[in-house]
Length: 280
Image 1 (spheres, rainbow, N blue to C red):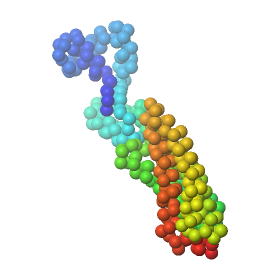
Image 2 (cartoon, rainbow, N blue to C red; image 1 turned 45 degrees about the vertical axis):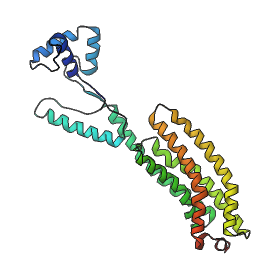
Image 3 (cartoon, helix red, strand yellow; image 1 turned 60 degrees about the vertical axis):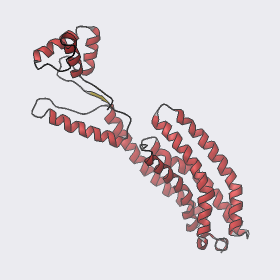
Image 4 (cartoon, rainbow, N blue to C red; image 1 turned 90 degrees about the vertical axis):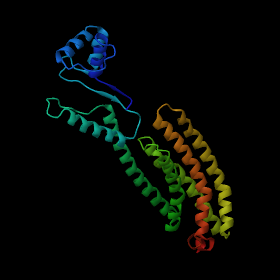
């Protein structure tokens, strides 16, 4: 919580200026409060300020609370706490408290978008790798393609959790965008490896050839994409800055997974991906 604005603050200020300059309390006498507010509203500036926090007949008033940037879950927690506190404070009175505002609206919108993006990523993940299964006509290489594509996403999300970066409407798109960019390099690498082994090349030599040729294109793609997305780091809107930084890191991590994790998986599972197994 950064700042709170309400009619109580104006009453305290007027009471301090009209009476004891060191007083910072609200008078117990309702008529005195009404008189002080009346005096405060005589001026144009005072009238404008009162209109921001209360109706003209004072039948309704609002308390505005400015919160620091936080995740939608934390905003929901703050809203629930505010509702419970307001209900306890005004219990037994004619006052009906309602917690509303743009913070609650955007928190609900952000929460909905995050949930929908997670579902969209799951759908895209299944669809993309179903297509890879069909392209290679092999469940083994379909599963192999999942490893270097899932590794950078999990690594970056793990880093976000460690750095306490919130999952919001911008950063939740990391997985979907990364999946659409990284899977191309994986397909090229596996296709080159299968082509080399089909030509009679041994496993290690086929890995070296695929890494040397396809790794250059993957490196170029990673550098261009990471530099392009890193520009968003200069954005004043924090979620956009986090999105650009994390996506640039995802591109680099995906390249490292392409040239280290993917060849290692092939080498460690010779019964599935060795050259003689591929030729058979």
